Structure formats: structure tokens, C-alpha cells
Amino acid sequence: MRVMGLISGTSIDGIDVAVAELSRHGEEIRLTPLGALEVAYPEDLRSALLAALPPAPASAELLTRLDTRVGQAFAEAARQGLDHAGPAALVASLGQTVYHWVEDGRALGTLQLGQPAWIAERTGLPVVSDLRARDVAAGGHGAPLAGTLDRLWLRSLAESDGRPAVALNIGGIANITVVHPDGTTIAYDTGPGNALLDLAARRTTGQPSDLDGALAARGTVREDLLARLLAEPYYAAEPPKSTGKELFHAGYLDGLGGLGDPDTEPADLLATLTALTARTIADACLKHGARTVVASGGGVENPALMRALAARLPGVRLLTSDELGLPRAAKEAYLTALLGWLTWHGLPANVPSATGARGPRLLGSITP
Image (cartoon, rainbow, N blue to C red; front, side, top):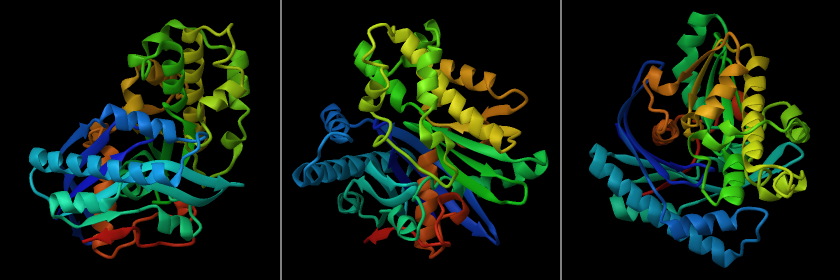
């Protein structure tokens, strides 16, 4: 069955689209990538989404307008995906997360925008969407759902290593999936990926990001600021856990004296935030005894970040997902396709040990 996956990550830089052929062979599920692309948001829509993120207030009117506009943008991206990769029988959409409600370590709700009816109307295909809410209702975090794909994908690698294999995604938020040789799997958000880096770049340089990590590479890590950042209680919390831009936003940095400190040079601030992302990811990987880390997501394109991460993972093989057959820029879109396929076939799509749910659950709702 050919399935299209759609997702826009926490960086809100565009819509990832991927089409895959999926089939079941006994206990094995085969995913064959057929094509992928990224469709940029219209700049005014991207700006409106960023402006609506916490801690900014958002009215019912604003959320309704954004839900429709994101749905229309996803519909256009789906149409382009069909033109690019050929026909599909089903579309799965993880939408655009704008708020993830966590209190005292427990997820209580999550909101993804992108009304699926627009996708169904534009493509003429059924759409599986709202894929996180059921896991949250079952006591889980609804994230990261990457464990569903990663457990199937990396089990044989973990078996051959005789030690856990880790799948790492560096988007706005970084998350890992730890797959043990016996198939036991946990997954959680480690903390910020690009979120604080992008905010700092925008505030200090006017650019949407520190392209290729060039500014950070010229800076020096501010150890005093890094120590304050590392004192964030989230890092010490035990998994399952999840987070987002409702915690790691511009006001968070301001509260730590980062962006508001006139003595902090932009290059030093970017170097410090790069060190924070690398340190928190590496600490999590080493905690679980990883031998191989397979990275994907936009953060992989940042050489300064990847150098900092490699330096903190001595003796660990650091790969990109491309080296194992999944394009790093589209891995989460292929994950979304898998989740939709599982739901369509009546199969549980969450990994309780990864999300913290009480048990396996069918995920999502279907728009005919």
C-alpha cells in the first residue's frame, strides 16, 4: 500500500512530505521510500505560527484561522507530493504542533493544527490525523512517536552490536529512541535541538538560523551561562518525558540572562547553546550505553553542532539515517506514513515503553 506522510516539526520551517510503499510479511513490516520533498510555508503563515507560540496569547479566532490555513498548506504540500512521487492510497498527517501541555511530568493534552478535511478535499484520499491524542488519553506523552519506526528499524543493529542502538532526531526539540538488543525500547525528548539556537540567531542577527553553524563556530562557550542552562530540571527528570517550545522559548533565555546580557557576544551565545544541545543529547545517549547513534533532522545540517556532539560521544559510532537507507530530512515524514498505515490496518501504533501509555493503542482519526 502506498502511503503519504506529512509533518511540520517544531522548527516550523516547512512541511515534510514522503511517500512510501508499506507491506506486512509475518512479523516484519517493510517500508520502501518512494520519494520525499519539503514544501516551505508561506512566509506570512510561518510568521503567524511563530507569533502564536507560547508564551504569547492565542485566541479561539486565531487558532481557528491558523487551523484552516495550515490545513490548506498541508493540502497543497500533499498535492505536490503526489505530483513528485506518484499516487498514494492514504495520507497520514501529524500536523503542526503548537502546544504540548505537560504538568508535573504528565502530559495532559497536545494540540496539532492542520484541519485534515482540506487535505482530503484536495487529494480525494482518506486522511489519518490527530495521531497523538489517544496515547495521551491512555496516560502517555503522545511523543516521541518515533519509537514505533525505530524499534522495527534498529533492532537488528542493536543485536549485532550487542548493545543499544539510538535513533536521534534533532529538530526544534531533540529526541532519542533507545533500542536494546532484546527489542526493549524507550524514547523521549532530551531537550532543545534547534529551538533555542534559532531563537538566539533571530534575536541577535535577524536571520532565521545560524546557517551551517558558522557563527557558533567563531564563538567561545560561556561556561557560566551553560551551567545555568544545564540546571533546568527537565534534564534530570526520568523518562518517559516530553517537552516543546512551551518551555524552551525566547522568554526562557531572557530569564537566564542570556539574550538580555549585553556582555554576551552573539557568537558566544550561539556557541553556548550549541554546547547545550550537544551536551544534553550526548549525556542521554551515554546514559543508555549506546554503541551506535543514528542521527536525522535539520540539526544534522549544522556542522558545528555535529562536531560538538561527536566530541562528546567518544567510542560511539555516529551515523546519519541516510547511511541506513532513510533520508535524514524526511525520516519523520516516513514515520508518519508508517503510523497511518498501522491505523488503517487496525494495528496499535504506539510503543508504551516509549511514550508511557498504559498499553498499545490504535492512534488517530480517519477523515474519509
